[in-house]
Amino acid sequence: MSTNPLSSYLRKPEIYIKLPSGGKWWPPGSLNMPPNGELPVMAMNGHDDMAMRNADGLMNGASSVRVVQSCVPNISNAWVGPTMDIEYMFVAIRIASYGNEMESEGKCSECGEMTSFVIDLSSILAGMQFPSFDQPVQVGELFVVLKPSSYQLTNLTSQQVFEKQRALLTVQSSDLTIEQKEEILQDTISKLSDLTVSKLIEYIDHIILPDGTKVDEREFLLEFIDQADRGSFNKLRKGIEEKNAQYRAPDLPFNCSNPDCNHENIVRFEFNPSNFFAVDS
Figure (tube, rainbow, N blue to C red):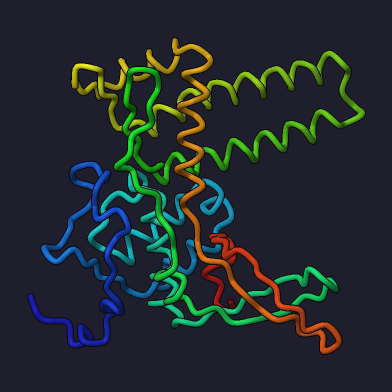
């Protein structure tokens, strides 16, 4: 087979990154970790750019997964990777594709003026904070060792929140009877309750018994969550919420563009796949 004379013009790695997780919590076969722990990141190609403009693909997460696997070839299944790794890679892909600077805007807390400013994405990568999962959550005599949320779980949760909001808007419709509204509300509450239980197990790596025995069988963990008393359930949920709260991107300072104000503001950096990779962003 002849060598492609255009091979030197094909995309190649632009930057190299180390995952926040270090590769831990990735199921076997989903990640090919290099010996030095650094993953090559390439710029998006035309197919990736089109994928990030697909509204349905952005909603269900398929477009985001496709782009990660295209731009970070060592990733073969981005769905199962920790969300903190996936979003870290999103920022790296943005840098590889469009450069280190990104325009953003914020609303002044004093006068309400909208101000455009430039973000240094390298500082975002350097300043992102990640929770430590070394310290287990104690639930009575048990020690519950947690793990980060997978991207698939995070995306599912976002879709459920969207469906809940849509259901509540439907309930407000004057065309429905009281009975129909009540039925929709009860169905929504039931689905959210089931999701809460199924979500919690996805955050548990294993549970350590008082004698040191480690329990990591999914069916046993699910039964524990399903049958745990209210106090244990709430303590576990609080522990998960605390871990999630530790994961955040750095705040972004900017001065109001209104010359009569010039107030110094701080906004939170937020990742939104629908506009993060826009050509004009």
